[in-house]
Amino acid sequence: MSGPPGDFTVETTGALLREGADRLAAAGSESPRLDAELLLGYAVGAVRTAVVAHPEAPVGADAARRYRADLERRAAGEPVAYLRGFKEFYGLAFEADGRALIPRPETEKLVELATDEVVRRRRLSSGARPQGTGHMRVVDVGTGSGAIAIALAVTLRRLNALDAVAVLAVDISPDALDLARENAVGQAVADRIAFAEADLLPVAAWGFDLVLANLPYVRRDAIAGLPVAASFEPALALDGGDDGLEVIGRLLDRLPDALADDGVALLEIGADQGEAIVALAAAKLPGWSCTVELDLAGLPRVARIARVVPGSSAGSA
Image 1 (tube, rainbow, N blue to C red):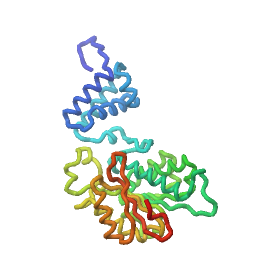
Image 2: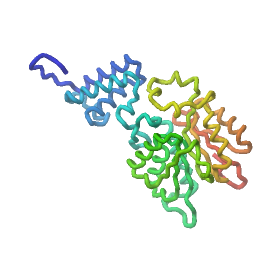
Image 3: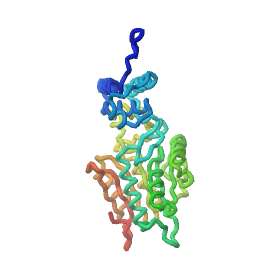
């Protein structure tokens, strides 16, 4: 902070947070106070809660300069996750940059359901893979930062269940795959996940027990109305076509070949697409089941799609 010679005024976290929140609010940020807290914590090398808990704490000149520089970038719309270089997801820190979509909290529902599906199928309450069973084949389609595949692998490792599955992460973008590999290394599961570049699925890779996907589902005409931060993310990861379900629909076309007979697909959808995905699945996959799981806000979030096989529980919710 500048001042006359001999002015040794020390800036505090509380004053800087007020300044930052006011600056971001004026710029139209949807969460100005939270953004300011995250950016100041990043600048001083502390967690957000510590910054909030100690408003009287002094902040050095270099940290204050970094903070104000990041405030200006955030005021211009750049996502906080890109400024900090990481994003928390499912209790893990993922490297985040312009190569892939920033992981969203709502996608955690998909990881939760995938974990439940693996545990249910393998009956891994004790953590041991049943003797004589093969690996459960899992694919994360459009993996982006790798958040879904990696969070699932880390969770199964905690359950001593990772040996029961073989995980493949696929993306059409080689840059996104590089980011996913880096995140897998960071979470120590790079040796447990295979990566492949393909449009949706490699042609020869069929017979999956579990297909997971968070594919683009934003209607093309709605992209311009998204928060400015979304303009920094890859358009390929957002554009779901005219109805928002174009890419998901292409994956539905692949499911009869891609899924094992008793396989299940768990697909993230938009909060306004619950009825539309059921109708689309009925049109493209007659005789299959499609149910929709709600997120914590009570909104449609994940479509569960499976063949209806006599004597099988795969088709039930």
